[in-house]
Amino acid sequence: MASYLWRKYAGYKYTKRERTFLWDMVEPYTRPKSFTRLVTLYVSAFYTGVIGAAITKQLYKEKYWEDHPGQEVPLMRPKFYWGPWRVIRGEALSPLLPNM
Image (cartoon, rainbow, N blue to C red; front, top):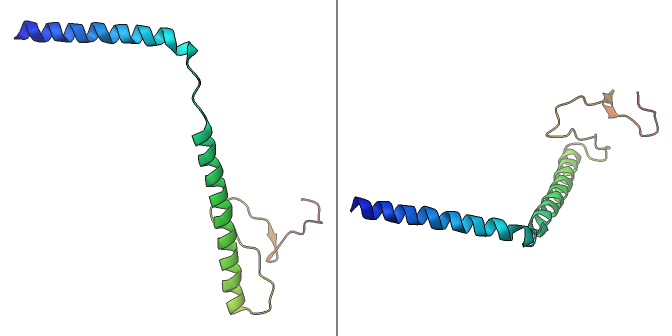
């Protein structure tokens, strides 16, 4: 029984090596994999983020207007950015001013 198992194992390894050798010769001539799935995933993730940001900003404005009707909505601080946030006296810097 043991010799039978060893023979089967040796045959398996030999055919596995033959298959590997064969595919190593054929591989340079195969078509490259398509990036369509990856590009589709990235585009859909980007637009999902854009739509999510627009909805979040609109909900922020509506909530602010409920508490302060008729006032200008202050700039919303980014949720996932913890770096320096340049705001002077509660207002964002004007785009007309040069960067300091």
